[in-house]
Image (cartoon, rainbow, N blue to C red):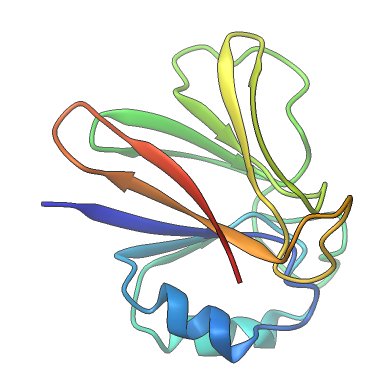
Length: 147
């Protein structure tokens, strides 16, 4: 069965209705920080999916951790807001926000992925989020989707 995780970042106090429509089919939702106002997570929580959040540099009111290490389908993912600055052993990919543009790089031998920003995209990119999917056993895919 295909597991779908919606990965969002940098909502900065806004959750557009079109985002809620797009991520409503997710099995889980991961937010990579810069929520800014915790109450804006209520519509996301009302979708009834598990929600994991990490703290961004614009999150003075949230009590979320700075990083989370999650394992899904045998793969390990590090969730954080800022770009990676070092090697992480036994990690499949580092998912991060902050830069407000989608990126797919390899940092220190680990894939580093940014879904872009829901609000305030930069460097000519569009507002976006990403899907982390597991199409079959032993495989995962990352797809950025424009809003």
